[in-house]
Structures are given as structure tokens and as C-alpha cells.
Image (tube, rainbow over all chains, first blue to last red; front, side, top):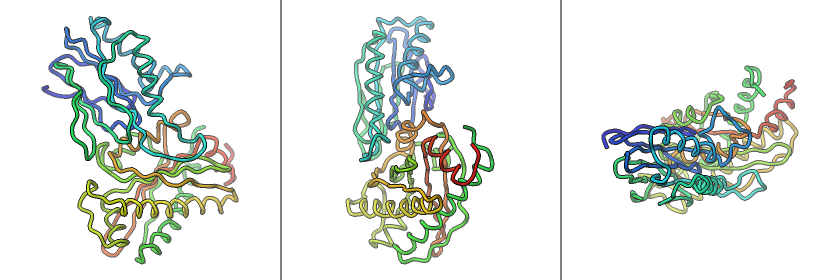
Length: 160
Length: 201
């Protein structure tokens, strides 16, 4: 990989090989990485919430449902085919355990659930996932190999 | 609701009084003379908070406490390595080399300190406004600041994109250390709070 394009929170980027993608320190957020291996085009979305209930058009990439759908649409416009697309996801941790009423729920788990559901609805095959637990993840996506590298604090580097 | 300069001044004042009490508690616990400046209070979004704390991948201690009662929300303390070292060294006499080697005992000491500091904060808001506010048992995690923060802002981001960020500067013996506190009241609680200070919203 020659260089990595940074994907910020509530954002999405698409690159072609040899460029890669990186997103830093995902906690309860989920990173969704999709490639078309034939064209070697890769997309990464960094979502923060499960569903765009209020049809917030200004921040479509903040939500799993609208964010993934828009990324798939943009990739198709670049010539990618839905049947060739494969997805890998990471994140959705529960960083804090708080015993209280409904103030803090498990947003990470809800993000992962919405991500899986959206991919299924869009008929994009999910091939690997590293989600949940209680630690943050920095994710690096290689558009050439489709490898997703996950770095966490005080843990070994993982490649899925 | 848009916050104007007067609202921010009130929030600063609340932050200031709370911080004074928290510094006093800290000083008593550590049996050290601790002085502080007027804290910097600002309204920041996620990216700005991350930059203020040294970048998304900078590892910090996060202590989260949720409060409920007449107003509700959460308080997140983010403690950088220098602050953690000062606390642990004063309390337990240990030297912190890296967050990787932190012990269970050091973790519970930090959790207790966080609890006491948050309590003195919340108590000062409570007595200023005559509102009953309860806090939960703190939850502690050590990780990349970006990961600690997104989990907390995600829960509240439907209400507001910005958080009240309070940076306190303490002077303890020869050292200058900072603590970072994020106050995330729910939007309705923020309105209640400002009304208590006679603000028209």
C-alpha cells in the first residue's frame, strides 16, 4: 500500500489500488469496508449510529443504513458489481459499563446489528467481522488484497 | 436550541465552581497543596475534543459517570498519563511506566478518585440550583481517546453535536497538570439548568 486515505467519523471514502484506507480509534462506531476485487476498488464508511430515523440528509454517513447504502451506490457508479462486493466490518465495542436507567445503552451492539441487517438487505456478502468487546480499534484496509488490519491498545495486531 | 455567549458564560461559571470543589477534594485525598487556574470551558465538537487531548490514538484513562434526577446526562473524565502518574504516586507511592502495566489496585484507586471528583462537581451544581441529582458508580477504561469518546458522544449525538469541555490546569508542587472533563447533559437538562440561572431559552 502506497498511502492511506483517512476516513473521519461519520464519513466515507472510496479509493482504487494501490491506495488504502484508514480510520482511527473506533469505539462503539463501526467501520464498514467493501471491495470489488476485480476492479480493486475499496470503500470504507465510519458510522456512529444505527438508523437515520429523521432522514438527516446532511449526515448520511453518520448512520449505518443510509451510509452503507450510499457507499454501495457510489461504488456501483464507479463500475463495481454488487455480486462481486464483499464486506468486512470492525468496531461496535462497549467502552463503558454503566448501571443506570436507559441513559447509556449498548450503542455499539446496536450499530453492529444495523450494519449486518443493512448489508443483508443490500445483498452484499459479509465475509469477516471483528466486533464487540470493550476496546477501541484502528482499522487499515488494503484495497489490493482486501485485508483489514486491526490495531488496538495493549493487544496484538489482527488481520481479517 | 442555540447556545449564545451568555449561556456559555453561565456554563463556564458552573464549571469553575465545580472545578474548585473538585480540586479541594483532590488536594485532601492526596494530602498535597493543589492550586488551580480558572478552568477553560468551551463548547467543542468531537474532532476538537480529540485534538485537545492529543489525538485519537493517544491512550488515556476514561472515567464515565452518569447522573440522573432532575437533570440527566453523563460526565466523562479523561486523564492523561502525567495526571494519572501524579495521583498514583501520591496515593500509593508507585511509579507508572506505561498504561500497559497498570494494576487492579491502581485502577480502583483511579476509579475512586474519579468518583470523588465527579461527586464534588455534581454536588456543587446540585446545591447551586437546589436540584436533586444522583450519580452512578463510575465505569473506568483505558484506551485510545477517540474510542472512549465516540462511545459517549454516540449516545448523546442525537441530542447535540457539541459537548461542554472543561480543561483544568492544576499546580501541584513544581508540576503543572491538566485534567479534562466532558459534561454531556441531555438537551432538555441543559435548558432546565440554564433556566435555574434565570436564563430565557
